[in-house]
Image (cartoon, rainbow, N blue to C red; front, side):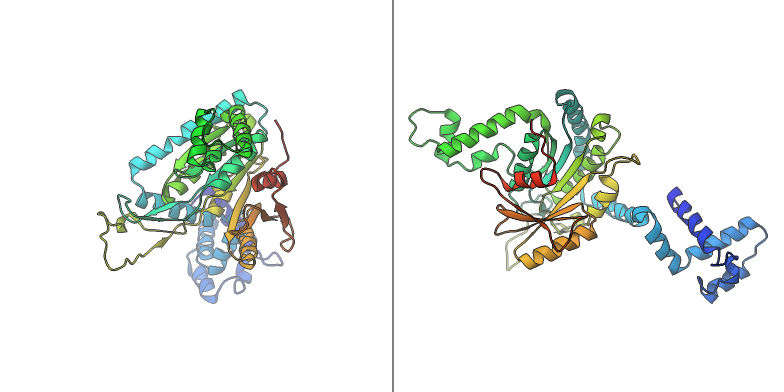
Length: 404
């Protein structure tokens, strides 16, 4: 039993051991406890106050009502978080070999070094942004010849990074290895001819980038040169790797290894990755390549839900007076009614600070932003402006501008 649990028990004993009139609980034991519990308590040999206390605590712990009261009154549902963390640790242990965990854990040192570098080279950095981007793969075989995935290009995350570094923010991008990347994303819009013409700067080439493309290339290239010390990249592949790194990065950003000056500045988390809801446990994966045949039946297991755990434990600054990270999640749907309903549900279920609701058909043009302290029936409409991405407009809505 932890110190926190003991302190909660003591508080409940102090409350429950008195009746509304301040009399000992055994005079009114039939109200908070069942007759059977009362009889068990009375039948216990009580020779000293200490033994009486132990008997009382034992009886309280055995009642369903106490379990309910304990869970609802413990700070931030601490007991629930402990159980969830155990489930996540088991998820890692059963689905990721120890050598892979050790390899991924080296990102903690490189991230800490990056943050130290930010303080040295950008002392006026107004805050830290943690962005996740891209899909997550779910291997069907140990050697991952076949896999299923959540489709996501990673464009949202790439644009968010650019919008944030333009405001001077330090950015940590946790991205799928195939995601569109910040700055480089402008090259994806070029044809092969335009790409080579832009790279070689060939005079008189048969095909050259349009005036608009050249202007965008120059703008992004200048932004990259000016802010390249503000971005740190960490890549993942599978959904197991994603959650493992999500915890590692979150705990590092809120840990004592972060320079003191950055601990006192805002931190914003944009959960823009498309995370798989299901996976195939490693022990159940085919060790050989699955042969072709007459169809394939899969049995998938639920991926642990970690947003509440991230909010309450992983991405949580320990100092009592610390400014806690601002949590922004995204909800993409194909129906506006479902989008609004699920965005509101996620806002309250996971205790986010904001949920960005968007439709697949129009996610580059407008979004609705639901906030913790806002009116669920009147979300903020954010539209893309001329010569500005929707991500830049979103940053304008959520973050005070800090132009460089």
